[in-house]
Each structure stands twice: as C-alpha cells, then as structure tokens.
Image (cartoon, rainbow, N blue to C red; front, top):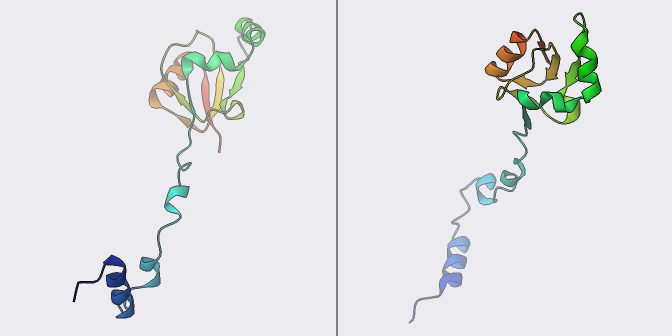
Length: 119
C-alpha cells in the first residue's frame, strides 16, 4: 500500500488528538504582532532648525528685548524631541518639547534659554 500524501497525514494527526493537549492560545496565530508599528513614534528637530518654527519678525522683535524671550512650542509644530546638532544664535529662548538630548539642553542653557518638558 502506498504512503498517504501530506494532507492525509495531517488529518490523521489531528484526528488522533495531536492538538488535544495544547492550550488554545498556542493553536491560534498571533494576529496583533503587526499592529505595534507606531509604538516609538518620535519626530525630531535639531537646534539649528528651531528658529524656523517661528517667523523672522518674531526673532527680530525679541532680539532687542533683553528681559523677554520667545517661546517655541515644538509639540504643536509636530516635533517631540530636540537634538543638539548645530549652533544657536546668542539670543535666549524658551523651548517646549517632550524630550531633549543632553547636548541640546546644554546648548540652549548656554545662550540663556530654558527647556520645558511637556507631557
């Protein structure tokens, strides 16, 4: 008698109780694995590009005022993390973001600015 093909062999194993002792979560495929792609969404901006988030007239307005500083809200512009690449002009500013790198925080504070964490 010739051996059965693959489909008959699998049917025999299932009928014999091959899956009977395994838990139900191991019998079913993982379907939620592909849905965790946006878990670490964090758009970044470098400090050399921070002044592009406000208008040029705003920068000139606060350049002459020594007691005030402009507030740049990165989260409302779509950036969550501020990185430290580049240089800032010698003008104080207040930056609001969810995350700051150590270098970015150091460079912002060197020009007399402040870093505010936003939830």
